[in-house]
Each structure stands twice: as structure tokens, then as C-alpha cells.
Length: 406
Image (tube, rainbow, N blue to C red; front, side, top):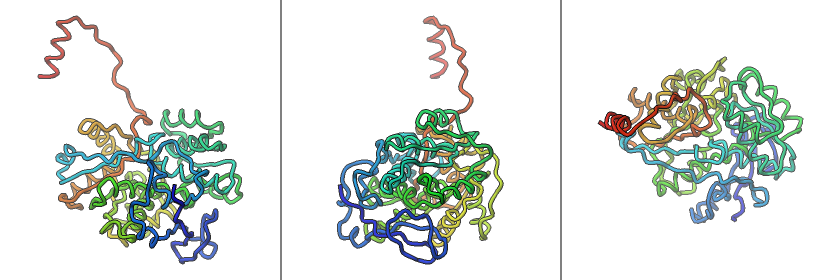
């Protein structure tokens, strides 16, 4: 397996450069850090640099050099689904769905959990921790168990039952917190400074975020390096959006793709701080939020990551939008009936926002558009269909079949 081409950590604010150590912010200005790679080496090697399958196929553009530290449950390599029937309903030329519900714990979080837990091993930690509204908790717990590490998982009290069951199965240390993500994350982030555990949160750790960059590389490979015109990514704190945008940037700088897609940030209306700031042309104003069916997007104060998303949107001529809970649930039903994809509300928020942006004529319908579907529907809960059974004889069964298929 090829070694990592990661060269250093760089501050996105002042440009200060640091070695590849465990560092969460810039010493000089407290700005966020991003990993930088040998782009000349990427250009010279070409896409033939990648070998194997799954997420670690992209080891050269990930920050874990030692294969002994690379943790996997078989994540990555998820389907890129061409959806012609739904495209016709939406009136777009071509619609692609990057379905990350096919990952081992049913969520895009597995990409960042793989690199977060691998980095915990690399830097000699024995325990991990995360504050989660659901998916991140079950994912970090599973990958920590896989790596032989202890995990301390703080889970949202209104997280869906399947997610809580999964967390309880994979960690001995599940703590359910009152309130929403914003209520706990700031004090938990302060505790990170004591280095009692490895930071697997979304706020600052560049090693965790990096795994989601593989979304861009997979989409590029799966389209034969003719990337979509538009990619719609979910935004809570902003990890998926930032990492995907940077993956496309790296490929463009290396000459592997002719241009990067236009990036669209998708939020739930009940947690739309980034979309609101983008629309108003101002700075982000943190929101006091309640519940949204898109649990994974329930962050009212995205902090410095949200500011980073806003900068990328404005510098890259991107677009941001949001969708109400009822629109998200209708999109969930529509996607299942039209294309057979059962995704969770968090997962389909991108598609709900895309539907709204198309209705408002903010996107060109003649483009190829890709939406990231970030979770399976099998980890969410809702009102089940009636369990009342029907007793049949041959005639009654035949009548029912004839009626239903008429």
C-alpha cells in the first residue's frame, strides 16, 4: 500500500505551517488547520497511484502513513447511482446519488471515523470520545472497538432508537445528554484540551475530517474523471462539505480533473445558520435550535467550521439552501418509491434542498447534479405500517391482486 503524501498541517487563516503532529488549531491565531499534500507528486503519479479497494485505496491522499494504524470495517466504495426516473420528475438532465448509507454503520461518518480512529492509534491514544446527535456516536464506537480502543460516547437524548441501540452495543461508555448538540459541544471541546481522550468531534480535528475527502475521489473515479457540474453536500458543522470540496480542489490542482464542481451546502431549515448567512450576505449568527427530523444536521452554531463553509461558498461561487422537516420527510418517501433507496431524513436533506433550489430556478436543469445521501433509513424510526393481518382463501387473494394491479 502506498505511503501517505501528506506533507504538513497549514492554518487556513494565517498560513502558518506545522509538522504532522496531533494539533487542533494554529498556535499563532487559533485558526483551523488543514492537511496539505505533495500536489506535484500527485500530478506526476496520476490516478494509477491508487490501489486496492475501499477508503484506504486512497491512502496516498490520507494522513496515515503506517498501514498498521489503518482501521477498517470495509467502508468506502459506496454506489454512485444514476437516477433517471427521479431526474425526470425533478426536470433535470442527469441526477446522480452518492449513497453513503451503504457504509458499515450506515452513514458517511464511517469515512471520518476510519481516519479519526487511525490517527488515535498513530498518536498513541487508548481512548476516543465524541459528542453526537446519533450517527457519529455509533460510528466512532464501532471503529474504536475495531481498533481495540475504549470509547466515551455522548449521545443526543432524542437520537433515534436504532442509533442508541447500536451505540450501546459497541461501547461500554454511552452517556445520553440533555439538550441539543450545541449545549454540550463547547464544554466538551474544553475538556479535549486535557488530552484524556482523542478528539473524534467535528469542530477542529483535521485528521478526522480527512476521511470524508474520499467522497470526492470516489465520485471522480466513478464518473470516469468527468465530475458532475454540481455536488450537493449536507452541512451541520461542515465536515462533509469542506472535505469533499477540498478533495475536488486537490484533483484539479493535480490536473486530474478539468474543473471542480459547484458546491451546494444543504441544511435543515430548523438549523440553517450557514444557509441563512449565505442568503443574507452577512456573517453567521448562531441559532438556538429545537428538534429537526434531520438529526445529523441539528447544529445551530457551526463555529469556525461554519465560517469555513461560508468562505468556500463565497470564494467558489457556491450555493446554499435549506428545507423544512415536512419537505425532508416527503423527499424520503419519494426517493424510496421512485428509486428504491431507503435513506434517513438526514441523508435525504440534500435532495430536499436540491428540489427547492430547482423550484426556485437557482440551478441549471441541464447540468449533471450529484447529491450526497449520507445515511441509510434503517437507522431511523417512524410510525410503522399496520400489523393487522388479513386471512385469505384463493378467491379473496385473487380479488385483492386483481384490484391492486388494475
